[in-house]
Image 1 (cartoon, rainbow, N blue to C red):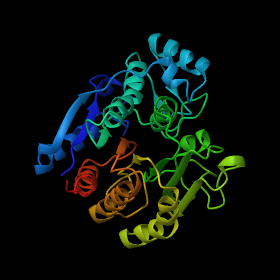
Image 2 (cartoon, rainbow, N blue to C red):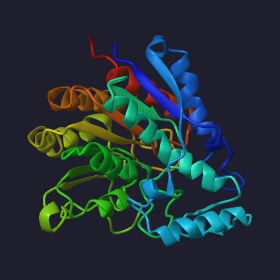
Image 3 (cartoon, one colour):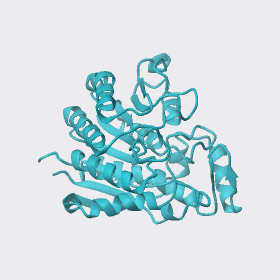
Image 4 (spheres, helix red, strand yellow):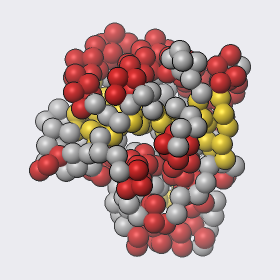
Length: 317
């Protein structure tokens, strides 16, 4: 069984999105608690996430936006309509450590210490764009990670697979014209954000064909979801031959989750884990970093996480 590095930080517990907000630390805690009850925890190595630097975050975000967010949080914060959540004094350091968790794992993987990692963090990131927060997200954690791997380790083929129930509009935008990153998102169609993630959205310029959107209908079940991924994503991922696979992990497609209309069970999350592992074994020596995005029902999130990571870690040495 592969070693799984898990990176998190206490600051990620302290970000307060607002009273009764679904984006809370408890949804990360249930994943960690569920994994600790499984035998696979014997193959887990724990890391304290470092804080991403302003330079790291500036790979993806406007430095003026980063500074504005720092100042807003230090002054006490406020509710941000575009984020649909509040920020407070703890939110800026939480966001820096959320972004830094992936970078911590990237260094360990690229230096041969582990093969795969999981950034167990919040706030999530895949909706945030160049100069503003969006949809619970402050900084785009997985996009910062991908750009870091390009800049520091000179990688030229990075696959980003996003199976959160919502389209990762921010990640798509970051690499819309970049052929070094193949972005593939399977998500509920006509959902959130509005008017993004359509079939015909495939990138532009040198990045034309390096964005794959797979919108699926509400009430989609395991078989339909996996069949769509097999048909539209797998051939392109195999052809691309990524040097590492990054995954925006969202368990909000689970049938119990209040924030989606998709009806997935653990079978779907196990299936996607097996497929991602096969792709990574084919060209990336099994290198995978998963970054937490959504998942808002405790039972569904725990079930999905155990199924996904059990499949991902099934590689025999």
